[in-house]
Amino acid sequence: MGFKNIIILLFIVVTSTVTAQLQLSEESKISVLTLGPGHVLNDAFGHSAIRVKDPVYKFDIVFDYGRYDFESEGFYLKFVQGQLNYEVGQSEFDDFFDQYQYQNRSITEQVLNLSTVQKTAFYSLLKENIKTENKTYPYDFFYNNCATKIKEGIETTLNSPLVYDPSETFEQLSFRNLIRSDLNQNSWGSFGIDIALGSKIDQIASIEEHLFLPKYVFQLLENSRTKTTNTPLVAETKNLNPSGIITSNAFIGSPLFVWSIVALVLLFITYHDHKNNKRTKWLDLVIFTITGGVGVLLLLLWFATDHTATAYNYNLLWACALNILFIPSLLKSQLNNRGISYLKFLLILLSLMGLHWMTGVQSFAIGLIPLLLALCIRYLFLIHHFKAANRG
Image (cartoon, rainbow, N blue to C red; front, side, top):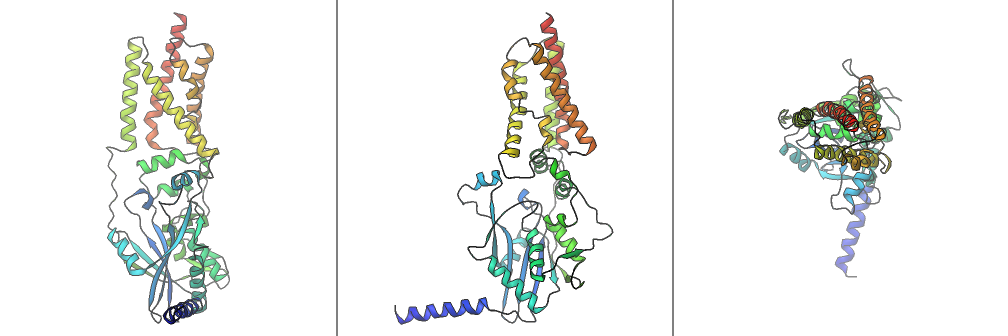
């Protein structure tokens, strides 16, 4: 090994040792950054990060736990199965700020009330987490994400749980309504979430469980204190960048609009069939194929993935997977009593869905309302039509 290579190696070793043993200065600050929502669905809930600034050692960096690699092997399969790993990442504050300022997203900063020893411990924890062997973690939207990691890091550093004193206007909500608080309920993002996630997210979240959303990390940390010392956690709050995001709530093209059009077409064909004493077979094939196919997908999300939030999904009451098996019967001109009983069973399921909705067992997508009404009328027509065909 040449003399030049030896010098370089010694420099790397010394630099690494100094970094590992670095004690932050008294002028250093550690703060929580909360970013507002963006334009696309995966940015709709905001983002959280941790800023570490030390003017003495002349560095200003940001750590965040929201990184993922689209290029990783089996990314989409892991995402669907609920087995996707996220990573902690590090960036210069200026680069981080410029990125989100360019996206026109709000950025607020809460400087934490920590001693120099605590700040150093927090920084050491972050540097340990970002090591290659430690930087990945199993992502969970509700319990293990970029926002919950903030609370976890603070409590680990303080070696004490946090006590939250929410404001008088704070209202505990269900997990589903917490999601809806960041989404237009009549949007396709909200529609997809309401279809895919089951009744488990209709439980009321505890105060601490609200911390899966970045905006609640900001709200709850603002009035939090450490349990052991009873001191306020946040020393100072700053607004670094105001939001300029304008959310579009156009009705045309929304789920409620689109499914209302579909329902009107379905009702028109059903009325025409009733008036002319006939049955449009292709329509029934489409209805039972789609509802049955969605039902199969929901069952797979429930039983074949690690997602806990997809369990006990009562969308299966309208998207009955058994409809797939009923398709051959729809090709016939007549239907036996067992087949007619199955159609009555589908009406009972829709009634049960309404009961679940009214009693709060599960809240469903409002875009489904016109479709569900149209399905009820179509099933009633089919019962009447097949009974008449059997008598004839």
